[in-house]
Amino acid sequence: MLVNRTPHFTMRARREANRGLDLLDAQLGLNQVNLPEAVRGIELLIRATPSLAFGLLRDPAFVDRFGAALRHLGLRGIAQRLDEVPHSVMAEPIPGPTRGRRHRDELPPEERVDAEGNPLPPLSGF
Image (cartoon, rainbow, N blue to C red; front, top):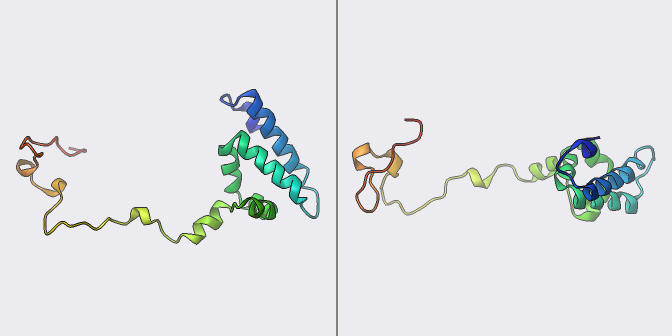
């Protein structure tokens, strides 16, 4: 339903996404997932609409049901991926050679100047 109601998908993307979803939907009533068909369904879905596939990777039930097919493609669920990375290294400050200097945002307004001595604009929020 989401695929058919999203206005920015092309007709080709809709057809591929629906084919992929149909292949995956056929696996839901089975005791064991048919690996080649599940892999094909996930590939079609990723090729048609990566954002929709990303949304499914966030769903623990989908990842649990199609885990073998995901592993075959070299993918993991988002929750499993976040468990591997305990914290974001992007949030850590980058050490640099400050040699005791303060950041220019911490300076008083009269000392906040650019390389030519012109005053910098006020900080945001002021």
